[in-house]
Length: 425
Picture 1 (spheres, rainbow, N blue to C red):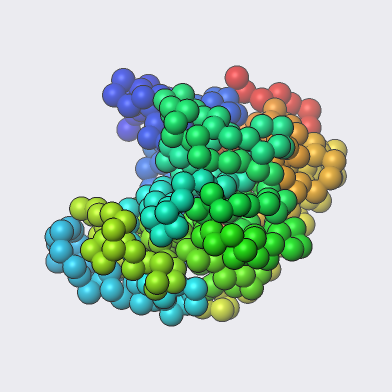
Picture 2: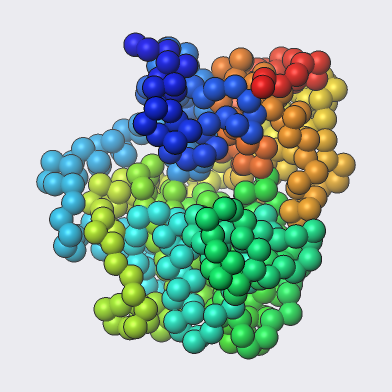
C-alpha cells in the first residue's frame, strides 16, 4: 500500500489541494494529512497501518462510533434494495417521523443532502415567507458554503456586504448583516431571518450568554422575522431535542445534518407547519434534489436515532466533562496554556486565551501556533484531532471510560512536547 505522502501527492494531481474539504489539507497546522483506510469505534487507521484515537468523528457526524454494527447493518440492508430511486420511500418518512417525534418545534421536515443545503433552503424559505431580503448572521458562526452565508464580520461591529471568500460577488452578501455573537441586535421590518448557531461550535465551543437566545426570539417576534437555529452540529448531539430543548427556546426553523445521517451525507430543515408548507410543491418556495431522502442515508440516520437514548446522552455529558478535566490537568502540569470548555456533550479547546470566550473577536485571540504544536504532539501520541484551532473535539459512545483515561495519559505527554516544541511547517 502506498504511504500517506504518496497518496496525498497522487491526490493533488487530480483533486485541488489533494482534498475534498479544505481543512483536511493540514494548512492550518502544517505537515501533511494521514489518509484513512478504515475505522472502528473510537479509532481510525491510516494506509500505513497507524491507528489513532479519533476525536474528529467526522466532525460530529459519527456519534455511536465508527462502523457501528447497527449502522452498517442498516446501510447494507437498504443497499440490497437499491441505492437511489428519485421517488418517495418509506425510509424518508420514518426518519422524518423520528425527527418530528423528538423535536417539538418541527411539525414538518424536508430532507436534503447536506447541512449547507439545509441552511440555504431555510434562508430561501424565510425570505419567501416574509417577502423580505435582509439576513442577520453572527460573526464566528458557520452555516455552510452558501454565498449569502459566506459573509465576514469586522472588528465586532455590524457589517454589511463584505464577502468572506473570493468568488462571492458583493451583491450576494449585500443583504447579509453580520453582528457580534451573544449580543441581541435591534431588528427592523427589512429583516427576513436571523440565523444562529445556538451553541457556537465553529469558533471553539461557545455557549449562548444568558438571555441571548430568548432575546433573539423576542426580537424576531417583534418585527415578524423568522428565527432559524442551525443545529447541524448540536442537533441530536446535545440531546434528543438539541440546543433548543436545552435552552427552552422555540425557533421557527431548524437546520439539521451530521448525526441524522448516521455518518452518511444528509441535511434537513424542520419547522412550523405553516412556514414549511411554503415549500414546493405546496407553496412558491422551490426546493428539489435528486438524492434528497436517499435510502442509505435515511436508514443509517434512523438507526442512529433509535440507539440514542437518554443513557447515551448522560454518558456523553459525563465523559465530555471528564475528558475536559483530564486535558486541562495535563496541560496545566506541563505548563502549556490551554482551556477546554464544555457545553453539554460538546468539548472545545482554546490556547493562550485569558478569559472564557463569548464572541468571535475573543476566539480569534487563540494561539494558533500553540494549537498546531499540541495537534502534532497528540498525533505523534496516536490521537487525531481536527487540523484547525477553531473546531470542536467530538467524543461519542465508543469513547469508553478506558479510552478517556488513555486520552488523558497521552495528552500529558503531548502537552509536555507542545510546551517546548515547535509546529511543523
